[in-house]
Length: 254
Ligand code: COA
Image 1 (cartoon, rainbow, N blue to C red):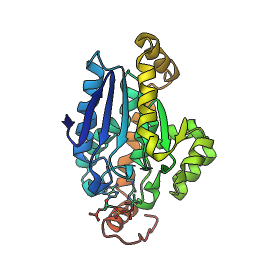
Image 2 (image 1 turned 135 degrees about the vertical axis):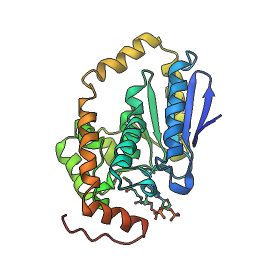
Image 3 (image 1 turned 60 degrees about the horizontal axis):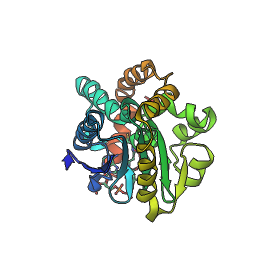
Image 4 (image 1 turned 180 degrees about the vertical axis):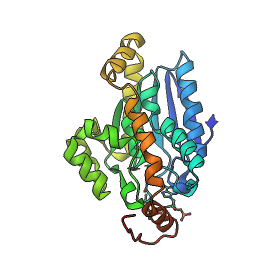
C-alpha cells in the first residue's frame, strides 16, 4: 500500500513505513508529508499494529525539508511550517512505539524525524547533520530538542557548523541506540519491533508517555513561531537560491 510518497507495509503486528522519493533523496516533499500523516493515522487507529518502523528508500534516510518547495510569501511560509512541523515530529505524537532505521544520510528534517522517534537504529553508513545554517536557516525542531539528547556544546557545534557526524559518533553521543551492518539494518529493526510487539501494549504505551512526559508542545510552538523571521532575512533568500542554483552562498548578515 502507498500513502503519498510513503510505502506502507504491515508485517505481522509491525507497520513498516518507507520514505520513497529517491530523486529528491526522500526530502520532506508534500507527497512525503502526506504519506507520513496518513501512514501514522493508520498506525494509530489500527489495533492490530503495535509498533512502527520508519526507513528511507535508496541510499538516503531523508535529506530534510524540500528546499525546492520553499516560498518567501509570509502566508505560504506559515502554512508550510505548520505542515512540516507536523511531519517531522510525528514520532513523538503517535502513541505507539516508533523505531527509526536510519539507512544513510539523515539531514535537517531527516535528523529531526529520526529524533522524534522512540528508538534509532543506524546503519554503519548513516550520517546525521543539521546543515540549515548553510541555507541561512536553522533546524526548527532540533533547536529545541537536539541539545536534550546530545548536550548543548555538540548540539550548537552541529547547528553552527552544519557539519554531519558519522554513525559511530552518533552512538557515542547517545543519539542512536545501536549501529548495525548496513545489510542487516531492516532485519535488526524488524526483530526489535517484533519483540516490542509481543509485550503488553498498555505498559509499552506508558513507557513512551512517561519518558516523553515533559514534552508539552510549547517549545514546538516557540520554534515554529520563530522560523518565519529567518525566512524573511536576505541571507535565507541567498542560501536557498544558491542551493537551488548549485552555487556557494554569499551571506551579507542581513
Ligand atoms: N530538498 C529538495 N531537493 C533536494 C534536497 C532537499 N533537501 N536535498 C537534495 N535534493 C535534490 C538535489 O537538488 C538533487 O536534485 P537534482 O538531481 O534535480 O539536481 C538531488 O536531490 C540529488 O542531490 P545532490 O545534491 O545532487 O546529491 P549529492 O550526493 O551531491 O549531495 C546532499 C547530497 C544531501 C549532501 C545535498 O543534496 C544537500 O546538501 N542537500 C540539502 C540538505 C539540507 O540542507 N537539508 C536541510 C533542508 S532545510
